[in-house]
Length: 305
Ligand code: 3PG
Image 1 (spheres, rainbow, N blue to C red):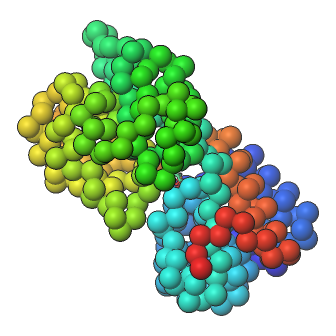
Image 2 (image 1 turned 60 degrees about the horizontal axis):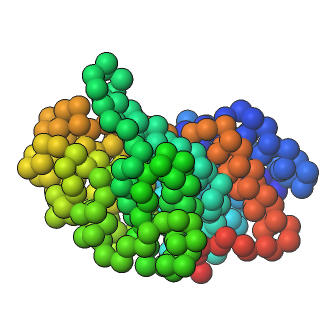
């Protein structure tokens, strides 16, 4: 069977080697499309049995063109890039690989936090993370890793997640918060880890951001879609002390930078999962999930019906 690994943002070579090894163990054929466009993907999926992607868009056009396709695995956590309804209609199973790249994303949170706390290393006096308050918005795999690392820095950590019981948070030394306004009002740093869904898109807005304490910093390593960018501009304008850092450039980056200058920082390309370890973990997990599904019908981590 043919398995296409299509990543506009290529995996590290060691990860591709690991994926190739898994696929050869099952006697299947690896096809690779790196740095391809959406039309390249549409052309390349025509005769493949399985597809492994990262943030690459797998829409109805891709799914309709893939006549032999049985499974798509998103090597990573967020699967908002895949049209689940179109996949279901085409009889295609969709999975993600939860947790495999979460430490990489969590480490980047602190990389960006320190960059801002030390004024981009410009020689001026910044501030420390120790004893500062950090609110984690959604306590999934990334949120948990953020909490673990934050405690190492001596931060006071709290989290909001209606799907996680207080006991779990308390056992991790994290203070539960049950109200979104409190999350923003009580924490100098707020780190976003909510998925991009119909409910969460544009849900982070000026009304929340303006509640942050003096010198508040909002860190977004989730998805740009969860931010109401027009509203963010309003908040950065009314509150000249607030900072915004994001793993991936906002759509309105120019307008945001015009208002906030050095108070904002964005990665040019999504960098959270760009480590050799995360590529290896997510890539190999994806390859194994594909093979176990194709050969043994294992549906663990299926996300569509
Ligand atoms: C994820 O959802 O797993 C992360 O955002 C990483 O995305 P990427 O694989 O496109 O870097």
